[in-house]
Structure formats: structure tokens, C-alpha cells
Length: 247
Image 1: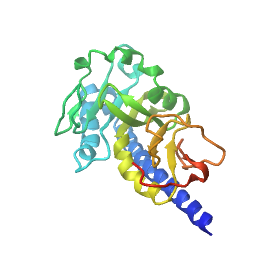
Image 2: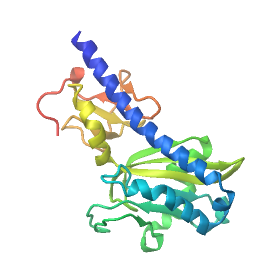
Image 3: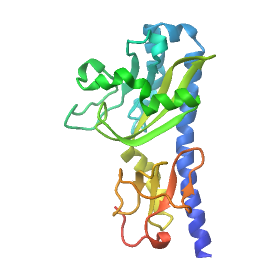
Image 4: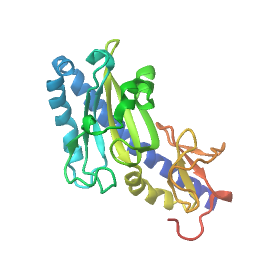
């Protein structure tokens, strides 16, 4: 009976992960449809920026926002091949050694990022290349974002396509530590030591103090899938029991 209760708790925790990312997928689908509803917005940089700002700034201005970044990145085919066009806004940033802290959303200024040259080939980066090739929403991470947040984040991107033409991707960034606040209560309620990992076994959230975010663990056959995501819940101790206080 106890095992059944624990299994039900793990399944509930996996469902909580699925629900959160389903909401993000729904947000991106609505933004994608709004961009595609106005062909002029997709072909004019100024109009496009205005349209994207109207979509992404409200959630970035929410009290305690889930998102730390959001916007649209134009495909090379849309801009002519060489010009980078990032209609991307950052939420209020916590203090960090590179950019300091901000109290309101701001637009990403690539010109101020002297190390952003790698973006010239952004078409090969996972958050762009996989949505382009699969025509589906994709979750990248967790990884350390050196461009904007200077912290562990997860990026969710969705392709914006008009017929067979790739216009770009809409996307959101979420701090991993923000996801921890959303997901840890349900993981801790299972009474087990668990890690939420991506398809490569990289840890995003953990109730085990010995298993840190960003580390890599094996994904065993009994890992519990989080439907609609590439994530699994993996037991990190024999039997998955948790002793003491996770931190």
C-alpha cells in the first residue's frame, strides 16, 4: 500500500511538470498564431517588433514572473541571410556580475554583448535548429545562459512557419531556480529522493542534496516520464527514499 501511495505521488509530480510546460507551449502557440495572423508584421521589422513587444511584455511585467526572457528570432530567410533580428525582451534581472540588476523589462541589445558573435550561426543552435527541422516546439536545457541571465535556464521555442517558409521561432526563457519553486513542493511531497532530468540525464531540479543542478545522472528504465516533455523523474537513492532535509 505504501508503495502504491509513493508511486501515485511520483506520478502526480510528473503531471505537475507536464502541466507547467503545457502552459508554456500554449503561450507560444498563441504568440505564433498572433504573428501569423498579420503578414505585414512578419515582413516589416518595425511592425514585427511592435507586435512581439505587445505579446511578451505583459507576462514579463507580472509580479513574480515565471519568464525571464521572451520574444521572436527571425529566420535568416526572412532577413536576407546576414542580418540578425532578435525581437527579444528580458524580464527584471537579479543582480549578476556581468549586467547588474534591472527592475523592469528591457530589450536585448546584441550590440552591447561583445561575445555574441556565435549568434551569427544561430541556425545551428539547438533552440533554433530542432524546431526548424521537426516543425515542433522544443525544450532546450538546462544550460547556463551567458548572453542574458548569467544563470541556469530552460528555453522553450516553437517554429513560426507560413506554408513552407520558416519565419523564425517564438520562445521563452525560464530560470531553473524559478522552476524549482514551482516544482519542488510536489517532488518533496513524494517522500523520495528524486531528480528531474532532461533526455541526456542532466539535472534540472533535485530533492537530493548530493545531486546538484547541472550534474548528469543515469536514466534507468524505471524513471518516470513527464508526458509532453523530454524530462523524467529519476530516483537518486536506493529505493528512492529520502532521509533528512533536502536542500
